Image (cartoon, rainbow, N blue to C red; front, side, top):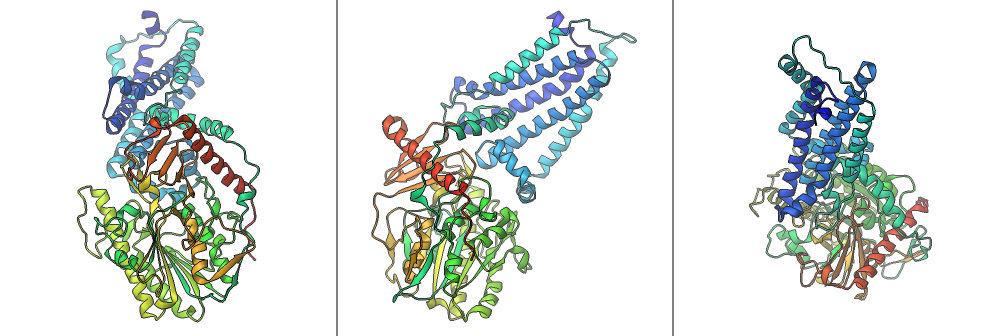
Amino acid sequence: MKQLGEILRRRDWAYLLSLLVPLVCYDLILKVILIHDQTGFKSARGAFGLVRSDVLFNVGYAVFWIGLFALVRTGLPRRVVAILFHVVTLLVAVTATSAFVYFQKTGSTLDYGVISYGLAKWEEVQDIVASVVTPALLIGLALVLLYVTLGPWLITRFTARWWSPRGHTETPNISALAPLGIILIAVSLVGFSVPVSPGGEEGKAFARDAVVNVLASRVDYDQMRSKIPSTTNVSALQPPTNTRLVPTRHTQKKNIVLIHLESTRARSVTPYNPKIKTTPYLDKLARHSLIAENAYTEVPHTSKAIVSVNCGIYPHLTSKITEAQPGGIPARCLPKLLEKQGYNSVVFQSATGKFEDRAGTVKNFGYQQFFPLEKLPKKGFQKVNYFGREDNIMLKPSEQWIEKHKNKPFLMYYLGVTGHDNYLPIHRYGFKHYTDDKMLNRYLNDVNYSDHFVHNVIEMYKKLGLYKNTIFVIYGDHGEGFGEHGLYQHDDTIYQEGIKIPLIIHDPGRFQNGKRVTTLTNEMDILPTLMNLLGYKVVGGKYPGRSMLAPPDKNRTLYFSCWDDYNCLASLKGDKKYIYFFGNKPQEFYNIAKDPYERHDLAPEESKETLKKRRLDVLSWYSKINTLYKKKTPYYSK
């Protein structure tokens, strides 16, 4: 031990430990807090399994710098090593902090994909970051930066006065083999911190140290990509790029209005949950409408969901916003189909148009005009989240547009944003108490606001004399999690709270006594249902969705994917729901009819053959859809 202590001068020990000890303690404390919040320390063995990677990484990290400082002792190389020590340690601290905040905010681990996306799209995500960065966090990060920069230098100067006699200079006389051996030990410790057991419900990503997980997830992506079966035969999924509409004797050129209810889950609206009185108007409207009782999104993320709504196809199953790129949508979408029948089309959006390049996406859909938040008068309209204002901001501009274009049938899309995180309180229609959970209560008040918005839209059409000649499609693009399964927001919330949505089609004069569709439905079904209601025949191709007015298909299987790459897939056939986590966590299996809130995982009781079949099925679907997009079928824009 004495020889080990002599590999560095005392002032070097002071310098290194003054930064390494606080870093190690800080990193471990953050992990302990997460373990406590996530599992409640159910067992000492389980807790150790979740913190083992953090201990090994931090010890290995500290030993590495000790060995490197012992190896490079003087001159310019030492100064370079010292600078790297500060920079890398700061990066480790920032990564650990970011991972901690990200997990508390979303319930998901921070990985390579999230960081690379954020860096590539910094202009888009900076508002998200700003929404979670509190003054206390900023002060804390500033203090960390200040300490990492000056702390070791100040502490070393202070301790040097009493640690070493005046005029005494320590010069360790050791072989270079010792530092090299220490560095090798450090690398081994860090290497041992990577493999962890995925046996717990928290998953192997959670069990890894935050920095280790970011680095290892990049390797995981490559490994998972190689394990997914390559699909070359996608004949059953040929894209509907050459479709067109043929009028029939039943054709009615009614206006179509799509009303997008952001982040609205089925269980939080009154027609689907009579116990909660958030949407009394929608409840009343649903009694005279077509309502899908079991409607789902395919991917719980707006930019993906609206592809299914407008184009009747599965979106590209990746977090990349490929739908905004030229040729990014292999289908002829609703606006283009209707344009050939003499329709005008327009999108109004209460959020900024720059987020996820929404302008590029709606252009690919074929909409003729787009009015995002930047083009709308903002005075008198409250901010509801970090990138949008209350949905009523779209009412007057859309009324003015209608006055100019009402001589022709039109497709109008209200792309609202009120229900989106960070759920800023809105007081235009009062603020009600639904629950003691403050965040959930704010969200439910946003849902209540959306009810008023739907009422305002329909009343406007009545005032303009267009109500009876308009079909209104009211839908949630996806749901929202509030910790029901440890997840918050929506991107990776593959459970019912994240993917089951309200879907109501109101066609004045039809469905006077209401029509409830009980079979499985998804957002791809909106396009064929509208064609059915308008009385058009689709020729030149086939959309994968099915009209809600068609005879029920009790053998239908719905498929789902998380937004983040290689995070999760799911399928729902009848009442049986299967979830696959790409090996990060054990697969799950639920009976939705008996267990609608997915509280009892039946996977341990299910046969291995059944689970294997469901796993191969979702992986095959995943491969087929992404293979379809890799063909880069050009968007039909003629």
